[in-house]
Length: 267
Ligand SMILES: [Fe+2]
Ligand SMILES: [Fe+2]
Image 1 (cartoon, protein in one colour):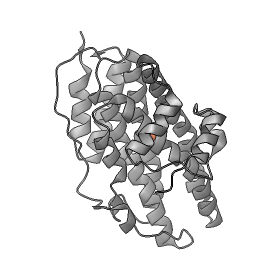
Image 2 (tube, rainbow, N blue to C red):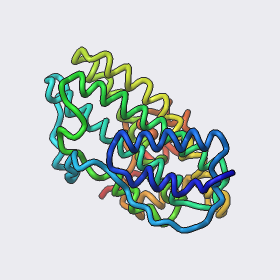
Image 3 (spheres, rainbow, N blue to C red):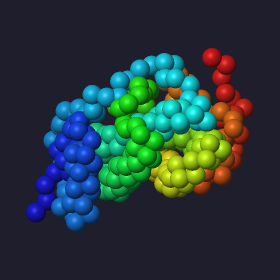
């Protein structure tokens, strides 16, 4: 007996309470693994995205600069990453819930990512709690989910601009953050980010894989299409210094990275 996958994804996406969202995500992943969920159902669903009342979401520029040398600055820095991981649970659920008619592996991939993002969230929330804070204590920025909304019309654009652009920026940002945390003596948080960086190479790799798959199905050149989408959506253009090793491991070609740096538009 199989039930439709999509109402289960929609339920996990819609719920606001954190532990329930993680519980529903883990439970649907287990049922998926057991072969109990049907990914071929085409019944339309309305998707809503649930998040707790706190943190307050503010425009990117209003999130305070964080000096990780001070305990408060370090808590703000970790809080920003905890928020990214929480949002990433919803993003992965939405990738799987919103787009139909894709191969079984597409759903398997993003369900597995949702579970990993929940693990990342919990790992970093523990670090934040060790500093005497919790998720919701500081304002957070809304831009990650904004991109989910801008790309909900097309899975090709979603794959390009969420995992292959925004998660790839995380690959670039993580090593410098680890250095700052280690310099402040917080080796445990720096180590937690080692796990996250390793997993995120996988997530960007899945974004790369499905983006290339969709480009090939539509006879589009992936690397030129990517640059076209970055311009069209006025998305944050990748810039130096890049984590080249991580990006190459995730499927970018050296030629594409060089072209991205050379063609960065003046805006
Ligand atoms: Fe993550
Ligand atoms: Fe991720």
